Length: 248
Ligand code: MG
Image (cartoon, rainbow, N blue to C red):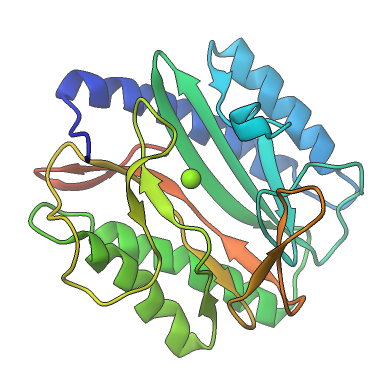
């Protein structure tokens, strides 16, 4: 069942989303050659607690960190580590909080210094696919219109959509119904209504769509070793259209 949120609940989700957005924006500024994702993780956790929120991922299903840090061929759910980021890398940072009973969840893929043109195209296409997907989060539309917007944007550009991981409803739970694939024909699935809140999160590969999980049991990497990008926002469907909750 898809939980429709009241105005009071949306206000709380807006507050949670603002915390996610401010911390992610600061993490994005911190990314440069020589910085480690472990440093980013430490900042995110401390700042989250300072703002009175709880890191949403730490302890979720046993995940051990506040952020997911997924560089280069890492798709999602990577562990922060002490490897210094290098010029030309990309780093996907996924971060969520629980605040006053409600979750916010967002992700960005950040270039480390200068990146090559092909990687830049991948990152830009993934960011744009999220923008187009969000534009479909409107009352009267269907859930798979959002899915189709992602696939319809990235595949003509030569990129591929990860199948194993999907977006999700969000609210009092980090992962609520419905599941939201980033592929599929439009015009299917539940009809979208004001008060629905979705974490929309395209995960896009430069090469083939296949992924595998590393021995840590979490980190998803591309099977072909090519790069992958990920952007995510928590979005509310309102009478006036989509409202991005994870925005500063
Ligand atoms: Mg998510």
